[in-house]
Length: 90
Image 1 (tube, helix red, strand yellow):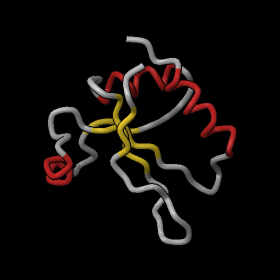
Image 2 (cartoon, rainbow, N blue to C red; image 1 turned 30 degrees about the vertical axis):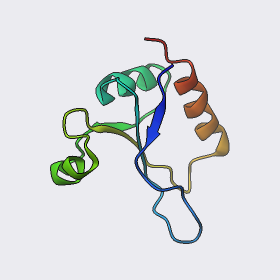
Image 3 (cartoon, rainbow, N blue to C red; image 1 turned 180 degrees about the vertical axis):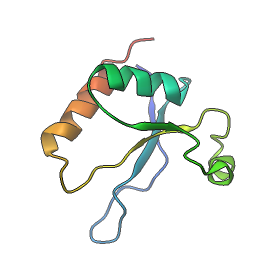
Image 4 (cartoon, rainbow, N blue to C red; image 1 turned 90 degrees about the vertical axis):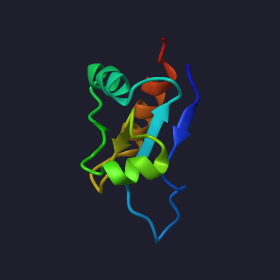
């Protein structure tokens, strides 16, 4: 599996927005999104209507994978995301 690169700061209560943007090193965000979708995990991929933000992050060409947990997201849901990502094979 490629290295996971997190673009958002580590969440620290109470001052954070529950949005995580990441990429798998060398893998287009859309491919990661398709892989997660096949495992029943919904994420958004691409530029998220924010090309200037991606230009600053250096992700204008690849976009990012965005996870937006909410009050309805269970720990098991996040564990499933991490497990699915750990099974990525190029």
